[in-house]
Image 1 (cartoon, rainbow, N blue to C red):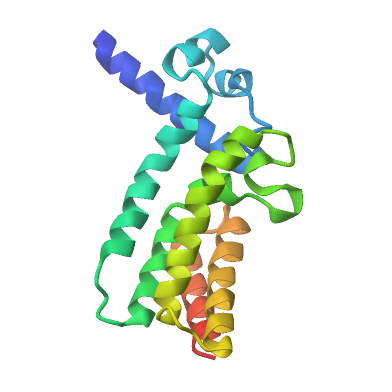
Image 2 (tube, rainbow, N blue to C red; image 1 turned 120 degrees about the vertical axis):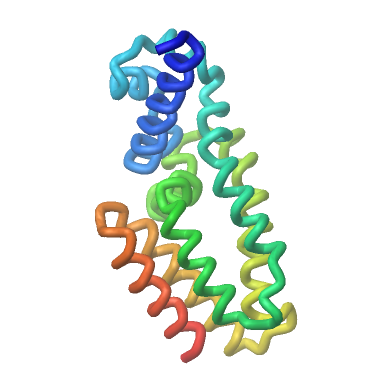
Length: 187
């Protein structure tokens, strides 16, 4: 294996371990030393590839952020059911990243309940923007109280479904979350 191939393999292993640990423990509660131990490297080796730790989060978040932007940019021709279905599929596909971003609301979400306010501020604004855009897509921008509530319930089904099903088969989770979200939305 060449040096550049070894470096790419090391980066991929570090990213995979960081994704697992961030999803399980939270971003703030996971140190570079924890990630290093998970991949059998020194903390210095991990820091060589990803310092500061924010670079790890950024690299993990970028593919999901690009995909949600593409989803939000698509014209569904007013078919909110199709949009909600694709949103549920996206959420399950990126559930580890969503767990990293949103975490357990009872423990402080992204910050893991710690004082990592810089990370929380950097993440909170785009999440709020995505959330509001998704809700507007589901309500048409000028919702009745009933439609607004159904849209929030549908998003809640997706949100809770991805947070608490990390160990469930993806196909089962997609099918169940989609049905639950559509059921709430169409109630």
